[in-house]
Amino acid sequence: MSVMNDMQNSARFAKRRCCNLARIMEFKFVFLVIALLQVLLHCAGAATCVKQDSCTCKFDDGSGVISLSTLNTSTNPDVPSFSVTLGNYKYGYNPCSNFSWLPTCNGVAVCQKSTNGQETFDVGDQKTALFNDAGTQITYQAVVGVVTKTTIVTLQCDTSASTAVLTATKEDPQNTYHLNLRSNCACKNGCLGGGLSPGSVLCIIFSVVVILYLVAGVLFLKFVRGAEGKELIPNYEFWKDLPHLIKDGVLFLAGGCKSDSNYEQI
Image (cartoon, rainbow, N blue to C red):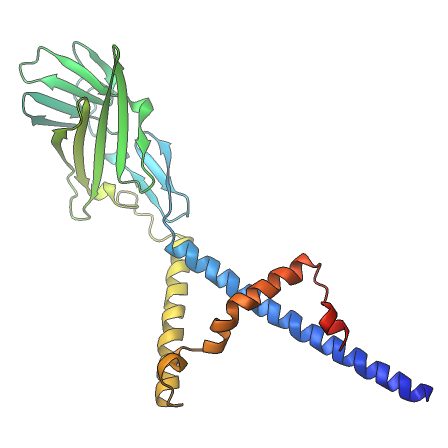
């Protein structure tokens, strides 16, 4: 009788261990899928271009840099790298270093000068340069008396524009000036030649694998198994149950990777 009990206990223990191992393997697969989904979200998400200096920002996903340093061509501190006229004013702009236009623009990034040369206004200081998240705009500010003047330089990526072109568009609202800078340097890694980053390569490889998985899966199910409708989705049952599996995985971890009572009772 005791031998029979031992055999039954051994069988129950073996079943319980088998179920636990199966469940652990299931959760490992789920965690792998979660990791792949995180990679996908990372690739699809919008990276933020973080300011490095007044004319450079670096994307926080490691995908590249936008740098205007090579556009700072003027070696004369009294001559800006770019100048453009709009209405009764001329605008001077240096992307990286300061320049001066007398009488009042002394060591600035952007200056507004009357066409008769009698008046100048500081409309942007280098130290205030602020990139937007996409790295497509730089905003400068300057305080003139009690008035804050703002200049927004929109960076227009043009890989064919080896010679940068500055245009002035409008003053809107009052004391806010809009300039456009079209250049290949406005493109990611445009003037650095850095190539693809490891993060970009990973995203490309992952995207190719996902596309091949979907296309090959649909073709196989369609022409080999004769599937139709939702059955054309590769591993449809798994993807349908994935939210529940993720929930079980979270609960499994929260419980210290211990089996629940249902498995203990098998």
